[in-house]
Amino acid sequence: MGISDRQRHGGEGMTFGERLYELRNKNNLSQEELAEVLDVSRQSISKWENDKAYPEMTRLLFMSDYFDVSLDYLMRGIKKENNEEKVTADDADKNSNDKYKTKNILLVWNNFLSNLSPNQKTLFMLLYILIICSLVALIVSVIYLGGYEIGKFIGYLTK
Image 1: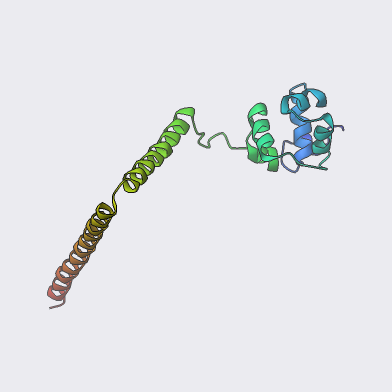
Image 2: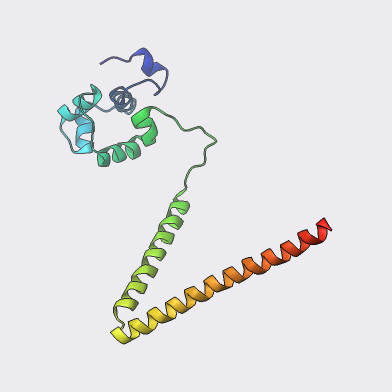
């Protein structure tokens, strides 16, 4: 497979197979070498490069990391602009930690609820309902009083 005119102009307009071929050659890899890296047969690489088949998502993700390109580029030929914000490792760690914190809070909460006796669960549910009703009453009061004050103010302005 030779380099086509589409390949000379970057990834846009190229097929997945053409982009894979280009990336493999830029990295001086034979089909056999890439197949070994991806733990597939050389025939699979050939089918992918000739657009007769596509790799699974896990292999696409690995290729994206291996060739240091985005999945958008690998699959659709869309290159990211230089001014687009990249997610740093610290950002990824922070997001991951936030997810784990939320998950841990939910696990602790679930564990707490599952260890309550039936009487405690009933009492807890009544307390929960009381808190919700109180919040609703507070919100309704604020809206009502706020509306009343606004109504008085508008009435004052129209006189």
